[in-house]
Image (cartoon, rainbow, N blue to C red; front, side):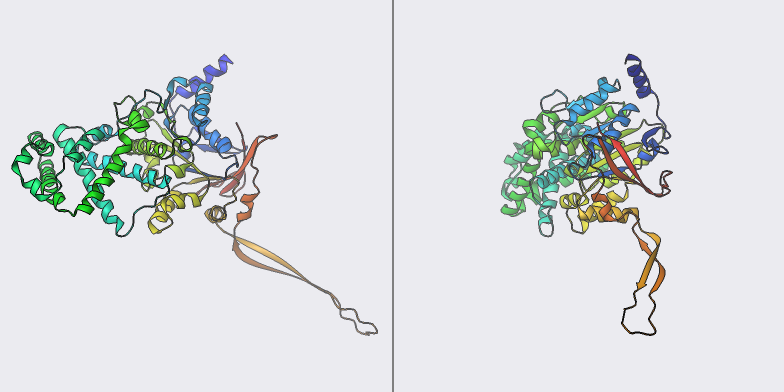
Length: 489
């Protein structure tokens, strides 16, 4: 047992290459680390064995190969599962479990500023993260994304939020939720107030603008500061009271959850865990599943996921150590920008594993309208490897059949003619038999096949799946698809 543990530890600590085997499928086929950089989508209905089967196979292999990465949990038991796997391969010291009861902290705002050098890109990144997390939380509570005239208010909220973040950055070099909330309280409400010099002399925003001008020397920053002054003391006070209150309420809605409770404990204090830890071989597990934490869990996982993605997107070249992003119940944290991360995962050497129950669940989250469907389709198209477990959703099964594609097939038909029997007939008609063939394009794997895949459980403890590889001919089938048995547990 000790020698086995030492062997696993040595294997986990050695350098990785694209040719390293990640999964063994049957007797003649494998998925390498280089293949896994092309993204994997795992689909299966509840109880289909996707988490305990192919999902568990990925978990074990990623840990065994020594990769660091980010894990978004779906169930309370997920963190313990990763603890057991890390212990099995001698990597317990590499595991970081973030929860609202631990001491691990990540100030994502300061992190984004440092990632982009404190520039305007960093400010925009902070606002984008806040907006994405708010949208995920809204979907978790059944709210729909804004469209049409509502988009006007969304744009106003976004601009108000950026102004607060930008003013804090330009004046102090940092930004926090508490700083932004203080700026919000000091905003002038009517033009007369903004034009009163006595009021301005005692106003926090005015003092911060003065500090920003003293700190900023480059023309672009000075231009941005002039825009902020115009917004705060001219444009914003002139907005109709009802519209202005909607803008303010929207920003407070973004910031308030981060100023208290679990989100403040994880993201509102200091920083001792960052996405760079994943590049150093650490496995960061966000133990805030939506099943127990609700919208707060969705926000926390989305914030860390976006920060991780932005960090990995800066990487180029094979000199970087490979990392992974493992998302169970992916519909809980999907955002419109996930496909941008997946599009460059091969270059950034990131293994993405996205697990969800059905295509319909992704459409339901991002919306079945043109923009939401396009974001889902773009992401699905970037998953070169798709693993289909048993599923009862007709949309997913039809989509899976279409993804595998149609083939030219020869169809054979037989016709039998039975001559009627008539008494006293002298010349009887003989019975006939004929054969006809035709060609048609049909699914080699029909949608109903996904209904009958083995779901796992006792006594065999095996689950069945159909693995599809884009542009890949599997040795075991001679086709782009392969039926595979995964051991559970």
